[in-house]
Structures are given as C-alpha cells and as structure tokens.
Length: 195
Image (cartoon, rainbow, N blue to C red; front, side, top):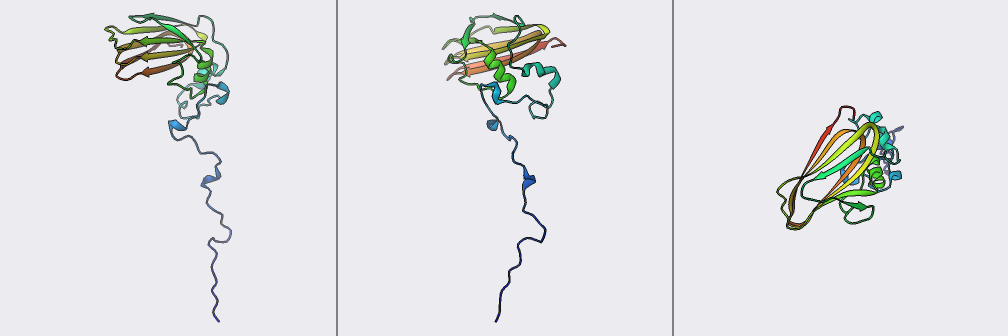
C-alpha cells in the first residue's frame, strides 16, 4: 500500500507576510486627502506630513488655533473695474469649488464671516487687471481670509492678488471659471521678512 504525505507549506517557525503589520496606509493621492469644513476633522500638522515637511511649524503654529483673528490684522483694498462684495458661509457660490483639506484652511473657512467676492460679468472683457491688495499690520497679528473669484460665461479678466506687510495669515482662494471664460490669476507674495 502506498500513502501520500504532503509537506507543510511553511517552514517551521515562520509567519505569514504582513507588509509591516501597519493598520494605516498613508494618503497616496490628493483625492484621498481628508476634506471638511469643520476644523475638528483635522489634527494639527507636525511637520512630518508631505505638505508640511518644508514649513517652519513653530512659526505658523498660531494658525492652528481655532480662534478669531485680530481686528485690523490685514487690510484689503480692491482697485480696477470690478466691485467687491461679500459672501457669507453657505451663500452661493462660496464653497462650490472648494472644500478645506487641512486645519488652517478649515479655520479660515469658518472664521471668515464674509468672503471677498469678485465676479466678472458674463461676456465682459476687462482691459485692465483687478488688483486686490492684502496689507498685514504686524507679524504678531493673526488673520483669516476666504476669497471667491468667479468668471461668468464667456468673460475674460486678469486678477492680481498682492500680499504685503506682516501678519500671520491663513487664506483660501476659490476660483470658479464658467464655460468659455478665461481668467488669469496672479498671486504676489511680497510679505515683509518678519511675516
């Protein structure tokens, strides 16, 4: 009589492959990032995150506190052929093309009671740029801002966002370009050295 014996598939004392035994796979693509309007959905950056690894965490740490900004910390001046308006949280089109992806962004969303809103009218072609100047009043002052720029269908415009002075400033810029529109956005970061 003949019997067949099967050998063990694993060597004695070995264990199954575990890929390091990690319970959490790090975020691999932008679409996997957490997104929320609520600051409580995010932890404070530590500097180990890919988006924060070159940031001076200690210098920007005040922007991680969910507290109101300082009165008069950043002045805003708009010049050019468009009038600025305000948009409250929940007022359209604020939030149509933007959801915060980190703590300072979510705080800026919540703490900006009125977003600066610039709308280029449909079929308008602006010959001169619209310039928005953000002027910081001091490196020890904190401010939050949300800007919504909308180019209506078949419009054409250039918008310049110029930042100067000093402040601890968290800002979101939401850009909405409708069908057939062309919008050129220029952001100048001309902050003082202590900003």
